[in-house]
Image 1 (cartoon, helix red, strand yellow):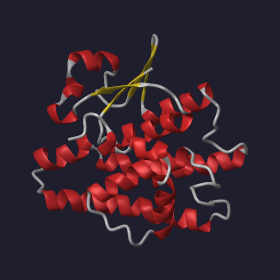
Image 2 (image 1 turned 30 degrees about the vertical axis):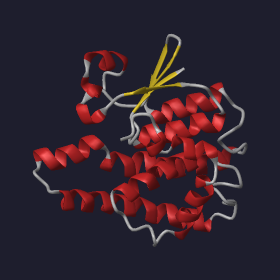
Image 3 (image 1 turned 120 degrees about the vertical axis):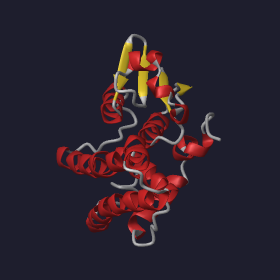
Image 4 (image 1 turned 45 degrees about the vertical axis):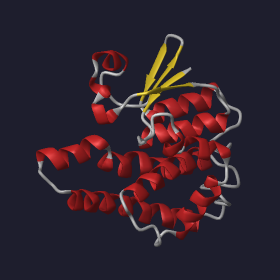
Length: 212
């Protein structure tokens, strides 16, 4: 199995966490977004969108991290990263979707590059943009996590799962964009619980071979 990814990409980060939690062996293929390697013809033959991550497994090519993560959960069901109960699974997917649908798309690289180069915004404006949407999503996540009696040490219960992969990757981005996390003690506690686990440590951007 090969994963085309970029060390700082939040979508790649969340996928690396899931792969590590599943205990899977995979090969790291770096795609340097800083040099626009994602626009190269060879990469766009794999993913016409030019996005990371991309999973290659034999003749199978999968794109979009939510689809890849769900495929991994079905293809490699142990250990499970979603709860057994139908209603609980929906709640966990909702937590992940707040990050994957409502926060990350508004502060990913192509949006920020548009702000910088097309609209001419300076870095202070870009950071303010990022903080606005991260805080809006984190306000909701904090309220949902704090109110959930099943939370435990992680987003759901006492085992890490898919929602934790999404959350930790977004917390990493929040720190990079200089967002003050002091208003989110529950999110901070979940992040600290995850930071103690090798699967999350190994997945961190600074641990990847293309990080510099």
